Image 1 (tube, helix red, strand yellow):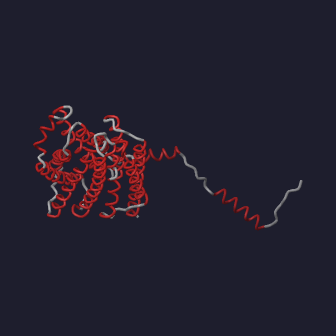
Image 2: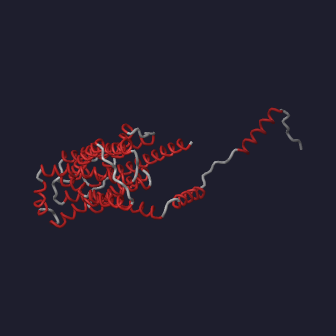
Image 3: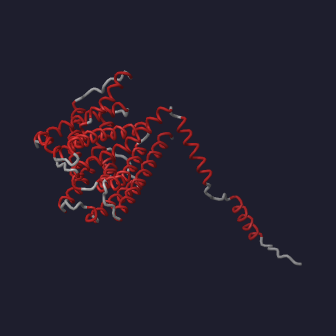
Length: 378
């Protein structure tokens, strides 16, 4: 038997090099078990790096966001669906719970021996501006609750994340990468789908002009909310110069107190304080339910804001964004179950797109944070 032998040295060299390259090239494959092992290891390391009290407080803070914020939205909608008429009352209730934050702030002064932040003219002016904007923001959202289903207003309010990213880029110079831009485009598309499907979720007693007024003021309120977020961050960077939990509580107390003062003035001018007793008498469910709705609206809103503040400082803005994304479907589903809100196919599609947009934003934010940490450590 004869064997073929290539006597060409260049050919033999090419074959050997090809065989060596094939042998040395590592095979690329994804190991799910290895991935799970890495996740478990990083989770264990993160858990052991903090005391158990830290994780208990973080869980309670996250639960406050996921329970209190949806409850506040549903209670505001319940107020209007049961016969409430005043937008000023709902916006006033949103900041009437400011003493709750004050009760949490005072022990930090007493037990931790922390001195209050000195008030300068610029800082007071900043609090006044933020308080006025917050009062206006709450009033805009009140119009949304008056004319829109709770599930729809929640989906529209999620656009505040896109506005926060945009104003954060323009005012605070936060990075705006491709994933964040993608999230803005996706969330904008989700809002457009709701607008095109307005006939499916409009209450029979709400006119077209009222529905689109609620739609408009919900978007405007979300834009103003994003501006407030960016200005608050700028306040920390330029004037306060530090990010600590008690400083954030101080800001919340002062801004809520000033917003409460502005809203109370609006209540006085519109004579809504005098009309509360008459409104309570005609409220579906009686005066007792009327009082409970207003009181619990104030409590749940403040607990939600406190939870968000705690998550921001115990974890990160990305974690707060994750929980903020989760509460949107929670509010929408709870509104469908408890308040029998209509849920069309277009609204479901809008909900899916909103969650997709949130995921893209969270990925973009985490990538930016990782790049920043890597550059600072190198």
